[in-house]
Length: 467
Image (tube, helix red, strand yellow):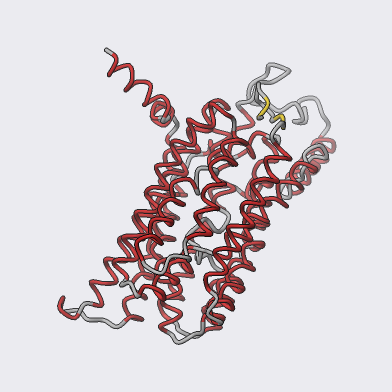
């Protein structure tokens, strides 16, 4: 029947079969991202509102957010040692930092204490991924998944994150409004209700830690290497493993010592010479895009709608959760589009319209068209994430993936960190709208430059050129 064939085709295009056939570790990683982004989404809605309730100026709020994003540099150290120290241990350590940051924000209103917690801990002012998680998880997913199925897995990974962010945003808005409503018999003030959200954030950090410990040994880079085809045909041994059977005791000790030294050096991986030019260009372009994103992080966009249209938390939560859900569903369409036109074209042709709509958001004087532009932007703004992850995983060797993804992530975060401070200054001078227009223009320039540089680039493990 045509309907049945169409249904099977739709399921195949959406990658449902791929997800079903994936390993337990793959499903756990997607669940980890859902819970983590649920936590990020919940705090993003009230992050700027909480600091404003503590009577800090927009410039001070922007500065704290900027330094908090810049503090993600510490997470890059965790990414660097993740493959050597252990991916599960590193993910668990990041979850512990989430818990600590949540508890500090829930218990203190001192600006400098909050600043330290934002810089040294893990809390997302932008609602997007922060910390060592994404680099480790994307590298692990690439290790666990065949090349031709990676875009499907990355799409579901992205969907898990954006769905979590949407759910966290709407639940946070409803809970805060319920806690503040005097008619409900609770009637807490703003600060008390916001601190409940940070307590929940800390609890979700603990849950993430437990799930990270449930991952199997297959997520570790050594385990994946053991399953690679071998030239000598001997299972369970490495070609570089010392042959100790006929060696003298002194030689054995020397070989073991050399092996331990090599393992220590492996904690700090390197990027091959042939990959460096491509990685350098990507870092520059992604940094430009991230600077533009930093001008309009979700928490400041929420703050803009709060200041201009005087919306209550529940209304803000509903609007931004709908936007996040639209963005989540678009990730699945991105996977199907990537298979047809390649990752480069998918990244550019979907990201470009979202940049235009971003620049239009602050221009309408009334709420309805502003929300319309926000939702139109949400339709395509995240569709470049799936092909970007697949593209980045394919252009470097498996040994470089974790460190390259981590390097790109931390440079993006550093570039993004300048944005909130600049937007805070603009907001304090009643020029909040300028940050939206400037961000849109910069993103359009990024799209055009990226397409010009990479439209014919040949990726590893691919049979076609991305044109």
